Length: 102
View: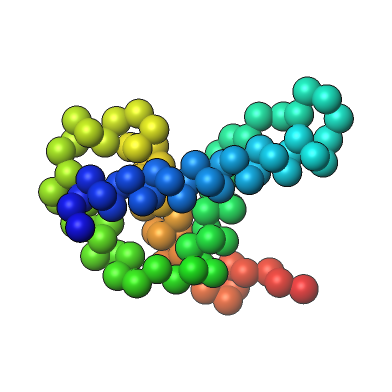
């Protein structure tokens, strides 16, 4: 797959997460539900990455960073690619002392 194809997969996944969070916010609150922002999106993305454990994720991120035209990584695709990169970086830095699970 090309770097563009991989970015499209990231974009589709992140849009789906955003839509699910938005739907949940609408159902869980009164009229005028809050917008879904990074405070809600990033933890959900981290959870999805952990649960799905995509094959070759690091090499795919590196492939996109190396071969995708930077001008094409602006706007929404660039935002979601950056969020995924940050989520993976966070996951790589996890250790037992950082995770507080009851």
